[in-house]
Image (cartoon, rainbow, N blue to C red):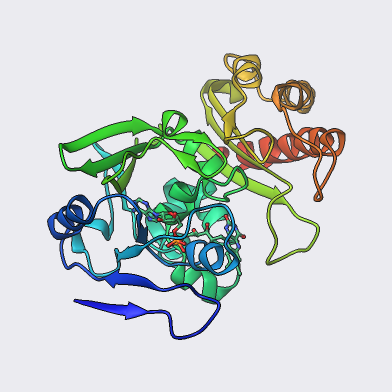
Length: 302
Ligand SMILES: Cc1cc2nc3c(=O)[nH]c(=O)nc-3n(C[C@H](O)[C@H](O)[C@H](O)COP(=O)(O)OP(=O)(O)OC[C@H]3O[C@@H](n4cnc5c(N)ncnc54)[C@H](O)[C@@H]3O)c2cc1C
């Protein structure tokens, strides 16, 4: 299917394709060549095209909405979670299995914009737009998600840390699409949480975001800790020193305060319109501490 879109100024003219399979989409991208873009929910892309910011104006768009291979959310104890690239924020936030086993991701998905935004916005779009403030990014990073990329040469897998290269930059090569995300099954007794800070309660971009996963052993001993930070560096980042400071020790408020301090020292934020670097570091400290306290509660009841 193909037609010209662009009746309403100021949206520029471009060709629009709506392939019905992944193979058809990849063939289209290969045949039409550079200048095209994937269109998922359009909640980032349409705004960027209209405003002429961040990305070059595409000459054609390939809608991903009718491609069955990109949909769905599945879980197995052996393989973990598979989330199709076009799973929407609403589908993720409402999934009982994600709420139960990947609660930090549910926390992130359920605050993306309004209900209308959540029904359109996809996890693939959130990841591929590569904003350092993307709300599913820290939870996905903490869960050690792997991106499955489909392209003309077949499929390849990339940990998200290698997928994001900088603001609005990914490791996707021309002609490639994000097919799905794979998250390993979390160990038993794991609790996860994501909290972001925004000037307004809703419909705002994270000044900082923190995702924490804690796995508890005997006597509240922390077997495994994962901390990921958003909006404090060109890409979402893990706070590995803070993770190491927690592992092997008994959970306590004093330990959490110390680890939160370490996480703040690992952030390298910039000053911008939404907050100074100093303010962001302060927010990382207090938010990490709060996330650790909440994650340990969730781990105890997991
Ligand atoms: C009102 C409003 C509120 C918002 N609030 C938030 C918020 O609170 N938190 C937040 O994180 N974001 C927010 N956003 C941003 C946006 O909604 C999210 O980033 C969303 O997840 C983008 O998904 P999408 O499906 O709309 O992506 P699109 O806009 O369709 O695509 C985004 C980019 O990713 C590329 N892309 C998409 N899917 C693929 C794929 N499978 N393979 C390769 N490339 C792909 C596109 O080519 C494009 O460059 C908001 C946006 C709006 C308009």
